[in-house]
Image 1 (cartoon, rainbow, N blue to C red):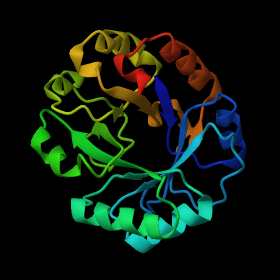
Image 2: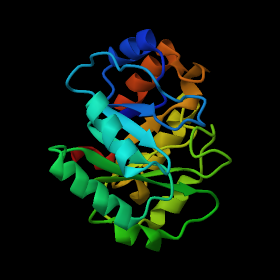
Image 3: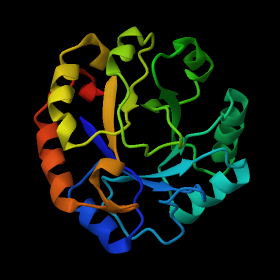
Length: 221
């Protein structure tokens, strides 16, 4: 199971988290976020993909951040349309950033209309399912994962929303369900924070170890 740690914001802490070898590290380029990143990303191991998180940003702003920080993935957490993503892909191709992964976020509360995914199927590398709340992300609580039993796609997805060490048993149960078949990665953030953007290394290491022991269906991607 892949692991993404999102909302990084402090240089020393970024380097400490990088020693745990997560597969993705997320940096939030949304100015209204308490985890807004406006610094310089330190050198990371090649195995860690840097993800830029954007909320209704302009094409130019996303491209600028991708080039400045050499991002390997962009996470679109707003109301970005399929047409917007098509233009983003074209822009990346013209700028020799065609290998940048695109992760499109969809928020879930009590139910979800999975038909909204269809226009994005051919455009995104991954979907990400997060908890619908007051904020675009980092709300600190999980949605009902049983909803994903209705997932109609074979597109691999990130599972996000209030996941921490207290959810390990729930993750083990989720792993045994058909809903987990295309779960590619776990995305964590607020449950591991000392304060916004600063992660507890000990708790993350414990989570990393526990998740590694769960044989998810979707880890072969």
